[in-house]
Length: 327
Image 1: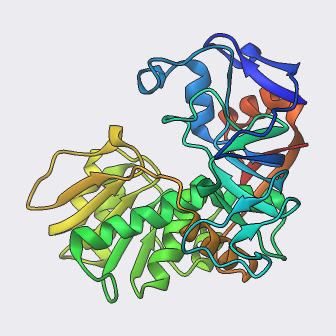
Image 2: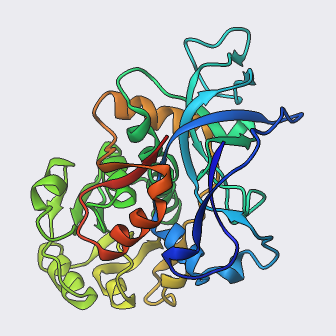
């Protein structure tokens, strides 16, 4: 099988395409023939060594990649709480289309989805319904779950979001877009900031568009709409800590990464979202994608062997949707 690996941290040229034997069945795990995997910013940071502190015991050569979609090579038990119409006696049969993600900063470090076959915990996978392509399904994985879990966390910080006002940055990205849809679905009024040229897309998610500027400018614009401050904010766009000024006293603030969690102030509760595999929620998000509710925007599909080029293109920016490596 084909694998894209790196033997050291560095620029895109450290990614090398190699052949490895197809893994044999492993007790308690299932094999997935991967046909699509999203290229995420975390892949670039990991490759460059910027996130080495999160995987201090990483063994090289390592395979990048969090998300995956494809077909089961082995029968898999259905994760508790997952409803799957094609499951018989609690089992997803080999050949079933599935999607999921590997916890790369956890037990799956170094064994990511930039490979034709991955070996994963069956609790990490969910069935993909008709109406969702493999490329779209892989966008929903870690990105959709991060957005949904962030809104869960906001609800825990400030209470019921029905009728609340929520600010989301990075709303045209996969994580931010998922958060917007989740918050709107819970009855929140959502103010959102997206990328330049994406105002129509963000508005189509059900949000009120706030002009894109620096964090202080976004906070000021949000206060112009809600003078007392929004009830909660999700910093998916990784704006600087001045964004906290948009939140009312006693509100809630969640960041997509711990590095962008500001110090608490004015009684605002702050936290970072740390996504974990969640087959039940992922299955629901995939059904939402099939229904056109959950966004799954794909910019372009590229061959797995072109991973280095995909990294260069993502670093350059300006994409509308995810780059997806296919095989």
